Image (cartoon, rainbow, N blue to C red; front, top):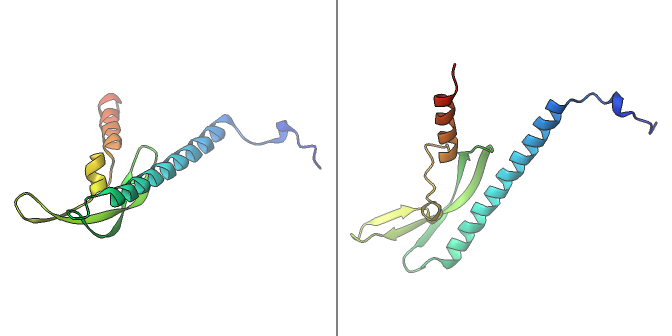
Length: 120
């Protein structure tokens, strides 16, 4: 029963490549999610608590080159130089995280590149 031949396996290189690519992308998305949430945690701990008042946490999903990343980040309230109450995400400001809708800047650039370079 333990004498399975390699020749009996029904797998091809394309399937191997697809499976490994999927695993690598999923792992990368998990790593980015963990990093973003860790950075958000550090920002919360190190922020000027007299200026930035923690309101709550909200989740966000971004489509990236690697796949979809859903993570949570903290929402803050503060008063700007003009004395107006503002709200925002310090993580987004730190990382200049301004996706186009729910698409990452890299994904948008790749799509535009492909549209320009590839012929139909």
